[in-house]
Length: 499
Image (cartoon, rainbow, N blue to C red; front, side, top):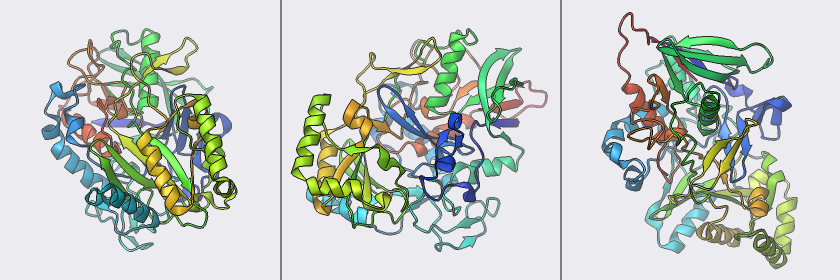
């Protein structure tokens, strides 16, 4: 097949990433402000979503954790009847682990020791382990020929444990998609057009027509491309809004009424503990995982020293179901530990002194994404229970670590003032079903009613994995693409555009 990939973000080499996230031009994605970095924050009514933009997508700024979910995920009623997912995906998980270079973190850091202490307190020492991550460890700082693909991949440099994974790896140690799948595919003929934003797609003459604009010059006339197949891989915040707009414009009238439904998070809570004097920054982004219960996990997360841009969104962590309750809890905590509060606000190197805690569970609240007449995407909680900004167990775990370190628990200001949770794992919106009456796509990832149109990204994940979803998304992609038949000469579907 001839394959063209269209990506609205730019292409990054290791040296293009920011040294710290204070360099907003190189780190943050806000093109209207002239910022074209790989990290995007999307503020919606019911949640704040963190995602990635660029050739390599979210892998450019994700933590690189490669975890497989528990059996509950494969047996979830939302999709269990479509296949024996545990059995079907097993070989594809293995392929994904090999392609992404999964390796166990070889060491222990200060945050790991703190989480180990929590594990002992909970009587769950056996449930605390190092994470498997897509990182090449080797000898720190030493560059060697590709060790993964028999020399067909790029050179790799051993991880230096700088903690910069989520700002962008400047050393070539992190196995982002542009250094495995896309690297190999380009050498087999894949064409990539970066900084190209898709604005429309429609079926035509047994194939597909795509309109796209130059992201650097959006006022220019769109270019029109033809393809036999389209694979949408823009994530929940790229794929779902595009399809909603096309349905509203009449280009895709047959798409399921469930488009935009069952948008989930990993029911996570992101909170920090600011402990001046501690060094929380050494290691990769996430170095260990504690299973705190049958349905929940806790992971310590870090940014590299000097990367304190997120401190501008810092506010005391204050659980509560109403604004009044959260403000009262903020006051109570401040009066209880005024010195800790002051030190947390005045600490010089926020990233070095802050342990970010990622708590995830298989709790299954969900939202809808809807399109307003203005073209703006909004969230709607009428179809289910919205994700929560605070979960009692997560608050207890954060308070325990604050007590151990003499630190102060903080959250994003959106969580304390508006009760809006933050997620790095937004999923769903194009879920699977046996027909258009029950889902947007079928088990082969094709959109019901539109053969040749595929959705292969986080929006196709049809249940809550409860762990970092990258490995699962990759395994689903392996399975879906493996079902496309080999090209037959003269086949009118021989040209494929991947958006």
